[in-house]
Image 1 (cartoon, helix red, strand yellow):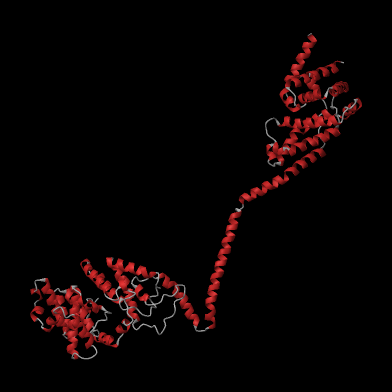
Image 2 (cartoon, rainbow over the protein chains, first blue to last red):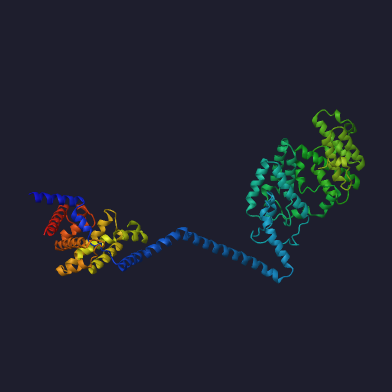
Length: 412
Length: 173
């Protein structure tokens, strides 16, 4: 029983891992280990097993630092597209240069055409330019601007271009209902008409009156807006107005404005180069009436100087006939020296206008030097507006006369 | 082992260095001959390498390693039955290195004691010997031995009890 208990205690100590004679003896047993060759074989086997995995890991680590494949592909595609676009552009330029190479005189023209294209695209189109382009069949916008054809060369290109340039400025200076309407009207035509205003061979004459009305309205104050409205109403009602531009220019209109009679009248000063402002003859606008009276006075003066015959007689008489309704003809034929010498006596506004108009008509008959003296007197009297009108008329009547410096500032 | 499963060969080297001796001795004790022990040793590590990605740290690596070695040793013993005789056991003991720097009588006594212990282990049934070696060589407890051998803890304890009694009886002779 005691032996059995002792054996059981040793077994419990063995299970508990306590130090015992048996454990000590077991540790004395030979500590056999594998052969080094066996170690090398096992380690080589282990390395060989993980080598592909390690290579994949290294490749994966490198791929992390590498650019994504889609970026490379996208960059390549973009490069191809860019190269194709450049080749296409170069091909187009080469095709354009081919005919010019065959013609030795054409390279400059071709180069100028290529240079003109971006200019026409950048310059904002003048809003009223739609009427002038309506008479021209719209060419394709991609086609280079053709050189001005001699047959279509305008009779007066410079004034036309100047009027075309001044019209947008005037329209821009007066943010007005009329401007909005003109802009809307021009926007309707913008898609159909090319914008080659610098090379337009001919400008329809009806556009100039409308632009002049715009320019006048630009200088007027807000009180003159009603006048502008009436001008617009007249311009839209009259043939050649912006509201009816496609039908505004009859086939005979350019020949009328380029007629010898008209040019002679303009050159002689008996007629303003108003391009159809005569249609305003029946206007009730006081300003227009005043201008018309001035025109009548000039006509009377010219009639007296020329004896009422000659080439200028016809348009002058036509102007007088158109202005026959008001009374200025009677006034100019019956001068009122008292009113001219004492302008302060005119108390009522209507009387003042009449007297100033009469005085203007009277001064217009004077010699330039005398007229200038009168103008200076007006300035000294504080009547600057009247002095300006006299200067304008003096310039119109005597364009060859040198205007003194003190009056030159009055002339716009 | 997890590091080696991710491809770290150096982790395997560290693991191998730590367990190579105990595994080899376990197999040598189990097989009683070096050739079979070498074969089983290499086969055990080969199984470990192949199963590296399937390893889950649900138990100690030692337990998992010995479990593989034990299964291979069982398969080898089943192929090689009957077990080696006393002559082979004597040959194994002669091949084992004896401790040096010991007095001759002490050496003789120690050698005799180790010889008796070795003979006692050889006489043990395989299950009892395996359990005894796992306990003495690898320091496994009842639960771990049961896990390696696939037996219950009480069975393992009974095997250990019988193994311990037989060895004590051999020393008492």
